[in-house]
Length: 124
Image (cartoon, rainbow, N blue to C red; front, side, top):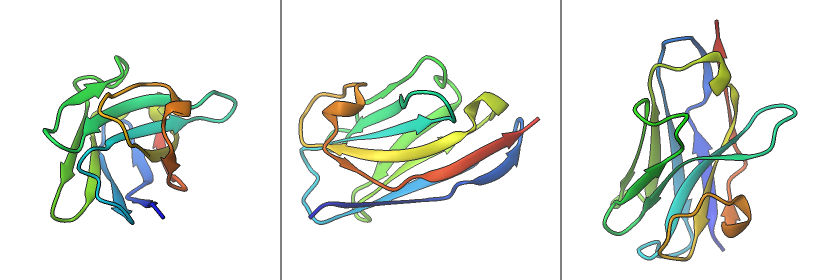
């Protein structure tokens, strides 16, 4: 049973930073892709960033490129999302997801396991 638990959300002013964490358990994630997605009220879930657990290859949505950084700590089985220069448009529930495949994809339906999510609110 794969479990993903997010933490680190909160309220921050525009221009500020937050770091989200996703603690993974239940499997060996060496051949998994981990992704961060977000969903704002009234909007569809959208891809934010992804990382290959082995090798650390990353991919970002254009809207966050240069501001967000995804990384992983193999020893802690944890994936991080460092978010800098936050904007009110980044306000959403952020979820991490796991995909037992080798390719990073942006489609939510391609990810098999999901966490409960953590709220990020950016005030102007």
